[in-house]
Image (cartoon, rainbow over all chains, first blue to last red; front, top):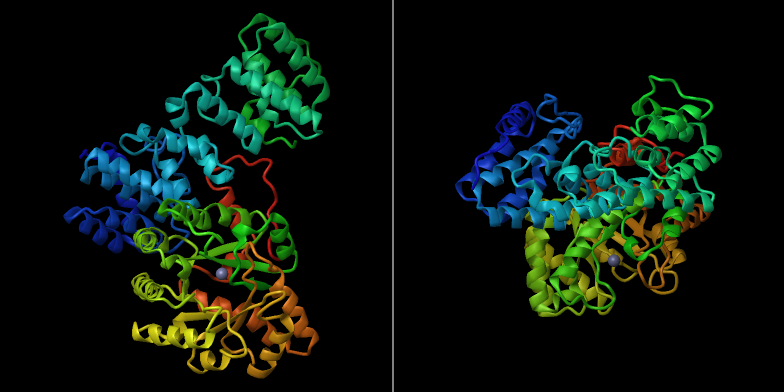
Amino acid sequence: MKNIQNQPLYDSLRAALSTGPGWQNLTANIDVSRDKCTRAGFFLNFAMAPRWFKSATTRLELDANLDPFGALQNWSLGQAARLLILLELAALVDTDEYTAAISELFKTADVNELIVLVKSLQFIPDGETFVERAREAARSNIESVFCAVAHHTDYPQRYFDTAGWNQLVLKAAFLAVPIWSIVGVRERNNSALVAMLQDYARERQAASRPVPWDLYCCPAWNASTDVDFQFLEHQWVISSPKIRAAIALGLRENKLPKAQTLAAQLPDQPSNTLRWEDLAAWDN
Amino acid sequence: MYIDPHVHMSARTTDDYQAMAEAGVVAVIEPAFWLGQPRTSVDTYKDYLASLVGWERFRASQFGIKHYCTIGLNSKEANNEPLAEAVMEILPLFLAKEGVVAVGEIGFDEQTALEEKYFRAQLELAKQFDLPVMVHTPHRDKLKGTILTMDICEEHGLLPSQVVIDHNNENTVKAVLDRGYWTAFTLYPQTKMGSERMVNIARQYGSERIFIDSSADWGVSDPMAVPKTASLMLQSGIPQAEVHQICYANALAAYQQSGQIAAEDWQTADFDQAELFEGNSVLRGQKPIKSSEA
Ligand SMILES: [Zn+2]
C-alpha cells in the first residue's frame, strides 16, 4: 500500500471532479472500495466512470506544473475519474495486486480505456512497472493509442530502452504523426535510429510515397560522417521546401563545424527565427 | 442511411467496410460469436472480446462506420462447461465498455441443459448491467426453441421490449411479434431468409418492431444484405418510411435502450475525427474520415 504519491494532482482531480454530474456516484463507489477493495469492484468503477460523468463537454483544467507535458489537456471528467480510480487503487492494495489489477485492465481495455491507461502511466505510482504495456501501445496501429504514449509524456524517454525508443520514433514516421514533438527526441537521438530513418526515407522514395518532413530532424542533428552529409545533401535536392527547411534547421542545430558549413551553403535558407513548431504548421 | 444490427465484421475485409459505407451503412452491431471451431481457452475468448471493443471498433471508424457490439457467451460454447464458467467470470469486464449495446448473441443451439443454464445466467447479467438482450434462435427445431426462449426471458422478468429475437422466419414471425418482442430477420444469400421473402413479410406484417440484418460472418453471407434488401423493398412499392423503420430506425430504437448508441454518433460529422485525433495537438498526415453525409 502506498500513500498517494502525487498528492497535488490527486487533490486537483478531486476538486475538478466534484463539480461534475457523476461526483456522487464516483465517491459512493470509491467509498465501497475503501471499505472492501475487490478487484471486481475496481474493474466496475473503472468501467463505469465515464458513464457517471455523462456530459462529454466537461473538461479538466490543470496547472501546467501538475501536467508538464499537457497529457491531460482537454481530458473529459470521465477520463479524469479513471485516473483518480487508479490513484485510489494504489493506496488501497499491495503492490502485487496493484500491478495485477492494472495489467488485467490493459489486457481487456477498449480504445478509450487504453488511452487513459497509457497517458496515466506518467502519473501513477510505479508507472515504470508497466513499461511492456507502454511498448505494446507504441506498437499499436491505432493512432490515438500510439500517440498516447508518444506525445505529451516523458515516459518513453525515461523508461524505454534504446531498441524501444528507436522503434517508437520509426513507428511515428510510419504512422505520419509528429516526431519533432516527442519528448526527448533530441536527447535520445542515436546513430542506429538515424540509419533506420535514412533507410525508411529511401524506401518511401523508391515507392514514390511521401516522406514525413520531420523525420529529417534526427539525421541532421546527428550527422557527422561523409555518408551522413551526402545523404542530407541528396535529400535536400530531391525534396519539398518543407523538408529542405527541416534539413537546414536540423543542420544549424548540429554543433559540428562541418554541419554549420553545409547549413550555410544551402540555397533558399529559411529564416533565422524559424522553429520546429513553426515549420510543423507549413503546408507539406 | 442504414444500420446493419448483426454482422460479424471481424471475419470480413476492408472491401466490405468500403462497400457498406458507400451504400449508406452508418453503423454496425457485431455480436460476440464463435469462431467456427471451438475456442480452447478463456484467454482466446478474452482476446476476441477485447478485439470487438478495441481494434474492430477502430477499423470500422477508418471507413466512416460506427461500430458497436454485443457481449456474451454463445450457445454452442455453453456446452463446454469449464470454458463457459470461465467466460462467465470475464463477461462483466466487458459489459460496461463503451459501445456495448446488449448481452448477446445468446440463446439456444441444440437446446441442451447447459445452454439453458448459461442463457439464464446471462439474462441475469443483462438485468444487472441494464442492457437489452440479443437472442440467437436455433437453426433446428426453431419454433419450439423460440417459444422456450421467450418463456425463459419472461420468467427472468425481462420485458419483451428489452429483447431482440433474431433469425426469424415465416414460421416464427407471428409468435414473436404477437408477444411484443423486437423481431429481427437475418438475410442469407442462399438459405433461410432471402430478400424476396423479406419483402413479402414486410408486406404482410408492416414495419412495427421488425428489422433486418445480414449476420455476415466467415461463412457464405452478404454484408450488403441490408442496403440490397432496402432497394428491393423500395422497388416493390413498400413506402420509404417503412423501409426506414425496417432498415434503420427500429434497430436503433431497440439498442438505444443501452444508452450506448444514438443517432448523434454518426450525425456529427467530426465525431470520429475527435476520437482519432485525441491528445494529438499537431495533426498531419491523417487519413480523412468520411462522414456519413460525404
Ligand atoms: Zn451472429
